[in-house]
Length: 229
Ligand SMILES: *[C@@H]1O[C@H](CO)[C@@H](O)[C@H](O)[C@H]1NC(C)=O
Ligand SMILES: [Cu+2]
Image (cartoon, rainbow, N blue to C red; front, side):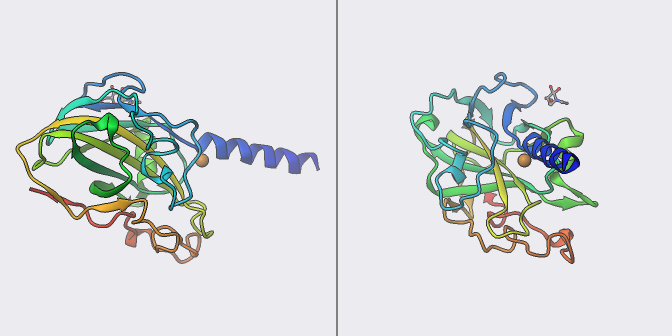
């Protein structure tokens, strides 16, 4: 009895500790500061309802004006995001939405999200392990071929450890506001959020995740990486 309740308590702690938020980012190695330029979620719980506007920029992330500072960047710049560490297996992806006149006034709800970066399962390791090994950091580049203007940059860490259950996939999301200078262009394809993710998608609901599933075949939700030109 005691051992059983201890085991339950321990697993609850482990679950909570593996929940995560995006806390900081750097543009070419320079950060606007801790939790600056980021739409802050009320807690570190995952989003699991794919039809909810929470899937766009986490809980309440669609509220405008956001009250969040917009941070300058240039097309092609290197972006480092800092997440809480997570032991939950899964990919990391990044999406851009824009340009818009004013990022702080953009809910991000609807069409126009372009996937610009994706890391799945490489060399025997899920992306979350790579992020963990880097102390929570993950670095990628903004595409070139972007119109100048304001954008939302969405970071998604999808945890698949409960994806063997329908509705179990856990989406951890953080949105940043950027003012990007670029030489011009359009990104395609783009997707709608909510809308593009469906509970039964084979990269979201994986009944055989713990037996028979081949992670090397996995590709994260949101379709192909966009070409911007
Ligand atoms: C994450 O990256 C930033 C920018 O390069 C760096 O300053 C910071 O020390 C890194 N954090 C860790 C935990 O390595
Ligand atoms: Cu968790």
